[in-house]
Amino acid sequence: MLDALLLMLLVALCTCAVIVEFVFPSGPQTQGWTLWGKSYSEWSRFQFALLATLAGAVLLHVMLHWSWVCGVVTSRLGRKKSGAAHDDPSHTLWGVGLLIVIMNIVGGLVAAAALTVRPPGTGP
Image (cartoon, rainbow, N blue to C red; front, side, top):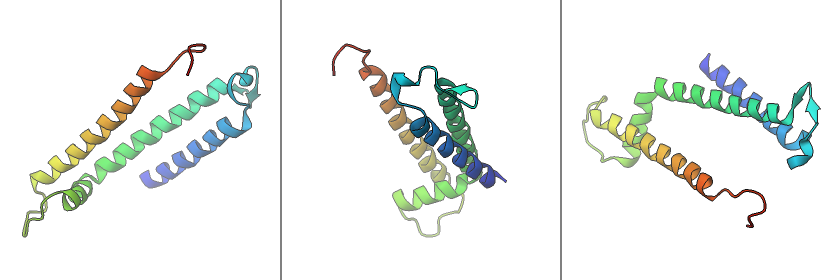
């Protein structure tokens, strides 16, 4: 059920992204254009809502497979222990560590974007 929802969300997000990118004109030229009663801004907000929903569903999917994620991360990055217990607490630490690294990378990229964005007319 969750896998089918993920597929539907992915298809909807891709469709919306293609509409926003290729159907509407670019930049400020979108002023006044509508598609099925919705403006470019509304389509853009819908696209972000789909993205946020997809991200939440992926997070739920990862939570449901958490022991598998931790086992894979441990087997790839951790030390190999012969005869280690299947539910070794270090597996969870490796998985949480991976999530912390991912969140720091995303946060760093968003912070860099926020710090380097420039208003019109201020140069490159």
